[in-house]
Image (cartoon, rainbow, N blue to C red):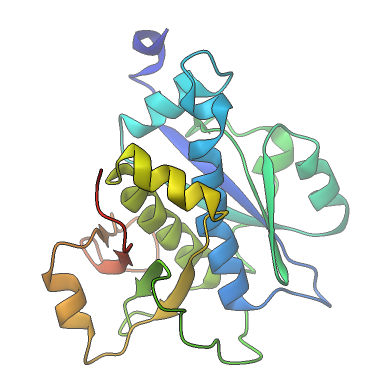
Length: 224
């Protein structure tokens, strides 16, 4: 029952497939992570009260919606893929998301994975987002590793999803959770953060100061 687990703090694990010789492009990995969070939230195992993951997802969302990104390669990735979860492939990137787990209860094959090593390059500058495409705007003044940024855009996608009505959620899912992650123009950042768009403020556990605004979610569909 939910009441039996609600006092436990949960975390959502995401694992990025990062081979040493063929790492994904940074933006591809960020967009894959954001989409993976949405795919998990919309999955019947999470959304249906009878679903296998429903109770832990509800318990996780009852606390801070913490997300932790780790990396895997070779045999690590194959072992991680054997655990219950969902793999999202997006251009050069693969990210696997798992149902929430207790903060201190990581499965062995995930606990041994490293958080470090997620500094990814951008071989080619990403194009402008398509008109009408949901965009997760990154704070241009903050430096974050790719792993940290993946968690932050995951938060942005999550908060945007929670603010949408059933119709808008259905429309986004029908588009396979199409979205873009882009670094905001410094001149545009004040206007982005000053409106009614969902904003992510970091808790300050790693890398950046508590309360830092990391991501603004610009989702064009109205709540309905």
